[in-house]
Length: 491
Image (cartoon, rainbow, N blue to C red; front, side):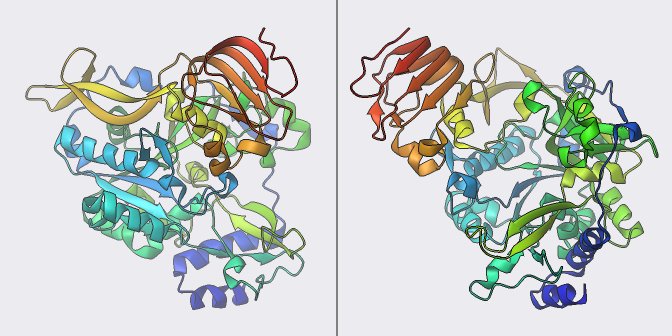
């Protein structure tokens, strides 16, 4: 550990970052598996639901917002989609990027409630420059605010054979990796931002991913969080068959605390129970509410380190060269902090609050008419400062992207031709209408042009290597083969 500490200090990393890495490294060396058998937990049967909170008065929203910060995780490059810049700078809707929409949402909230809610972007060493440059041009008022940027730490990669610091003289930057979004806690502490926010009277922080446009600041959730005085609340959604491989919320029998159990934490003998969505009903949306004074007290009581479970990822030191030396990247997840507090809670939210863009399939769907920019109708009860929603008057644009269809379409584009954003864009002159689509499957290179609509379940294929344009028309519950020299058959 001494070699790692020396390396991290030379890089200018804080003591909080070093201490957090030390905990992870100690778990690695000790061979901690992190396995959580079914017999050690109980399933969560019922939780408060956001829909039920809507009917309650939310009180002095302006006062609550003055004590609130919105923190967006913005450290991802979107490399799996072929991006080399901050993922949040990707255009997603109506000519706007994720970052544009997030900034618009903040400005909307401030204008609507007359309260300057704080805004923080947690950038990584890879996204900081791009993000600040974009904000300075498009949203200069935000970039000039105090503490608008929290820079994520970086962790040294661990040589998988020696457990010493990995070295890669050809490109020393490859010796470092992101520490996972669990780094939010040592970053807040080590940067001094936690103290500055608390000293400025900020009590509540809403944390979410920048690629999840459904994760907006919800005043009903804020009011509930403040009223319950809990340290930590997680927004969860109901698992479906598509989510059975992912993690779930549970309660640990040993201490009665809520916890997250990911697939890697489940013994093989318990896989059937893990995937039983009728038993383990809820998954983490990664939308979190944290009480900052209580977080500060917890960190002070635990020597500046939250005891988060280790996530051990085995990679190669150069991720683009599988023959380069194997390394471990040590990470943590911010949602795991739910088990660090006796009074943690969870609220069941609608699925639309969890709409991350992880693949070009997600992006293709989001750019279609299956999603729209929402408009909320708001008025205030005189003398109470209480916000309500209505559907008939005083419409104001919320800059929120919401589902316009009964259910989001399942889009499966051919990875060989659409996995990277630039390749998808080259084949998409115009995204087809998907508002009535159940599923769209594309095999081979198919070019989409304006005037195309999809309804029901549609399969389109082209077995050749050259792109073929799909004739612009309506396709419903059909199979269309565009392969040249074949007679197109639409059933």
